[in-house]
Image 1: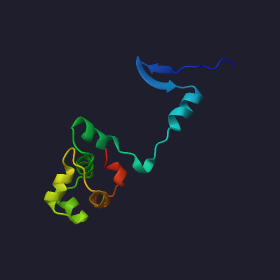
Image 2: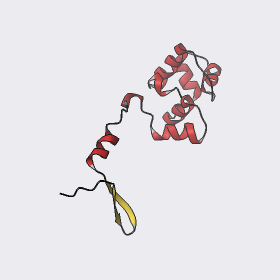
Image 3: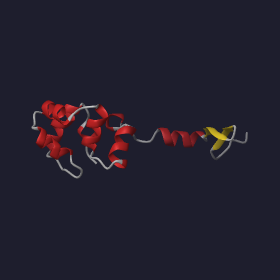
Image 4: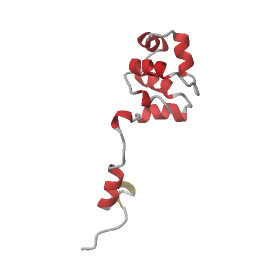
Length: 112
């Protein structure tokens, strides 16, 4: 049997439709060590990277929350929360834990 050793692209009307991969390459791609609990949705990543926002702010906007709402959930003032949301801010671990809990995410999902 002559198995293909490189990806094959199947097209329909001149547009790529499928990619056929050798099984070893498929396994390498799908077994990559990704912790689903620490994954960041593409939309959050887009806000953070393309729009140059902190992950804390990107998560808040993605979840449709106001600064006031997150601050209240975290038990801190809106002003203190706004400082933590600024690009380049380095919240203390205790504050980061409060914000993560308020956003219902893991603390690792808020650090860059």
